[in-house]
Image 1 (cartoon, rainbow, N blue to C red):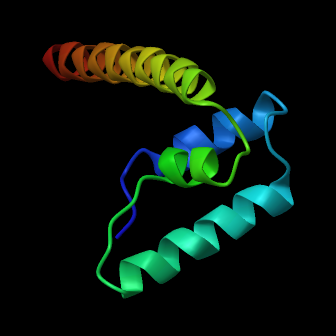
Image 2: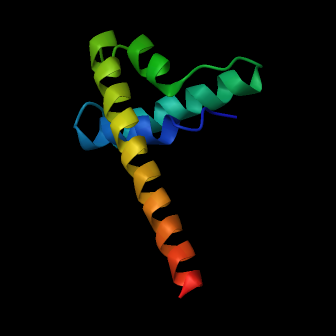
Image 3: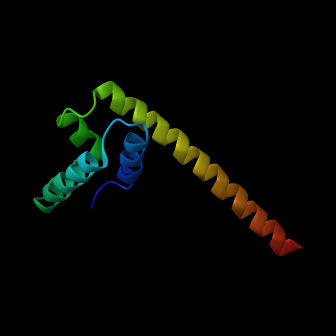
Length: 89
């Protein structure tokens, strides 16, 4: 199974114009083949290995991913709090 955050890394790279949709698809196919062979490899590592981005580019994407996930987590908590408050009313 691919890493849970691989979809976000791929989406961010695509949105930033770092890779094309075709390149992303090829990387995902490679990742699936490696997984089938019993090897786990994060999508970002595959993209760097293919020369689609540098290690620094990947680190930047991972920082962006961390920020996005933190925002989502905060939003989810606020929604949960709103729901619980609504249950009281």
